[in-house]
Every structure is written in structure tokens, then in C-alpha cells.
Image (tube, rainbow, N blue to C red; front, side, top):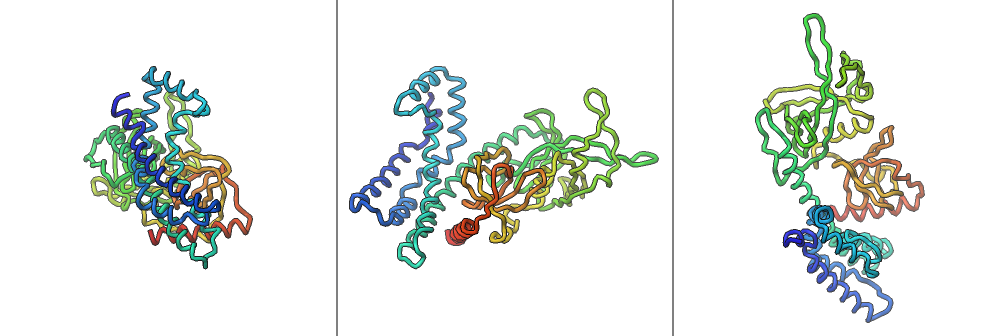
Length: 398
């Protein structure tokens, strides 16, 4: 391995180990004082504030770590051979290297769950409750910093990649910015009205959207890594609403083989997008077709919300669901969910996709309902609402 590869692969793991050892040493000392440990909140708060900073750096390196490991496995036969021998050692229990590399990230994200459980089990009128709540605030802030660090690195790299793929045939837009990130991307059918001598008809065009937190870039896809920009507008200049197929006078569309066909699925799931002011300062109205009800709902939601300005519904009235199967995010607007995660439902589409808020960190996104089950037990719903109250308190005070 090169020095850079070694750094990307292991980052500051020595610092992480050192801070973890300090934490364990204090826990062990407390255990030596009494076999039954009454409280660890003071130790948790102390180390979350003063010792666990290396975890933020380590988690921020996640995107480079995974890519470097995959690259070494694919291009470095010697590395792969030695790694296989190491993984076969009894101490590794046949676990792959990545399972050890992600341990620090898994460990730090479990700390808020531990402290939340302690808060839940501690009477609110007990002196220990305030100490436990402070510790929960501290570790929750730490985990948010870890998540934000990893997300920031991933977003920055993605911005540079997209910027190299865009070809501006209009006035260029300075895309790369530390405060900009991709919210959603995907292909849609655009319907364009052509005016003839005796009548009007609507023809179809393939378009590809890049929706960022503050701007929409409209392109035509040339290849998997090349897109021609045809228009753009700031998100504050966008208006989106559903549209009925009867409003369009559709003309047949030819396939590559010359055969006529009707893109009926896209015709059924239409929405109208208005750019109040596009790149040229003009008002533009367009109609687009999505492939499914959930695809349209996701675009309408993404285009209709403007970052932090979106109003959250009353959380206490929302349906709660528990995740029963791990569900990794595949698109920027989706949630990555783990078994036992609780999600508050914002909306549900007829084809099985839902938008919701992940209870443990208030992240909002989409997920398939087949990975979840509705919580109906009143006691469980009540416990989740209490936990929600503690987490909402963190948003205010941290």
C-alpha cells in the first residue's frame, strides 16, 4: 500500500483506539468500586465532550475508506492474498476486514441508544435523571457531528463528479459549493407543445433532472457520464403540481426501431413544473411524466420543499412503523433503515412507498413499506412518544 492508501484505509484509528481505551479504563475503575454500577452518565458526558473527537474524523473518512479497500482488492493481488490469510486467522472469526473497519462507527452510534434507555429507566424526579439527560445530549451531538462529517465528504465528492459530467450549452452555472448537495436525480419524460399550421400537439422528450438543495439543473442524457444542460432555475423559483393526462394532446412516439408506442405509464403520472424565472430570467411551464405514483410523489415532494423551510407535521398524530428488515438507501431522497428503527409516516403512496421521519435522528426520506410494520401497541406508541420528546428536547438545547 502507498502512504495515501494506508491513510484512507485506516485514517486515525490509533487515536480512536486511544480515546476508546481511556473510556473503558474509567468504566472498569467504576466497576472495580462496585460490581453493580449505579450510573455511568457522568463518565459518558465527560468523554463525549473531551475524548471522542477522533470518532468524528474517522467517520468523515468513511467514503474514502470503502473505496480504497475495494480498489486494493480489485487491483492489488498481493494485498488481497495477505488479507485473505489474515481474515482466515481464528482471531478474526472468518469476518471480512470491512466488518472491523466499521466497528468504530457502529460503536459511537449506539451510545445515544444506551443513554436513551438509561433515561427511560430512570425516574424523572431522581437526581440521576438530569445527569443522564445531559449525557444523552452530549453523545447525540457527537453522533450528529459524525454523520454530518461523513455526509459532507460524500456530498463534496459527488458535487465534483457531477460537475465534470455536465456540459453547459447555455450560460454556465457555478455548481461546486460547500453549501450545495444533491437532493434527487433521475430521468423523466418531458411533454413539449408543438404549434402547427392547423393544430397543436404535444411531443415527448427524454430529460434528466439534477435537483440540488438550492437549484434544479435540467439536462439531456448523452451517456452514463455525460449530460447536456438545457436549462436551470433556483429552487425558490420553482412551482410544482399534479397534472391530468387529458390536458395533453399526445402524438405517437417512435422507438429506436421505428415502431410507434405510447408511454402510458408516464402519461398516468404527470406533474406540471413552472420555472418562475429560469437561467434567462424567463417564465417557463413544462409537464413531465414519472414512471410510477411514488416516483411522481417523490418528485413533487422534492420540488415543492425548499430545504429547512419545510414545515414538519404534528409528530404526535403520525402513524408509527417499526422496521423489520434492513433497508439501505439507493437514492439521495431515501432513508437507510436498520432493523428496529422507528419511523413516523408523513405520506404513503398506493404502490407501497412511504415518506417518513426516522425517529432516532429526525432524518426525512422515502422507504418501501414492505420493510416495515405498523405499530399498534398503545404502550409502545407511548414509549416512542416519550423518546420523541427527549429527542426534540435535544434539537432545542444542543
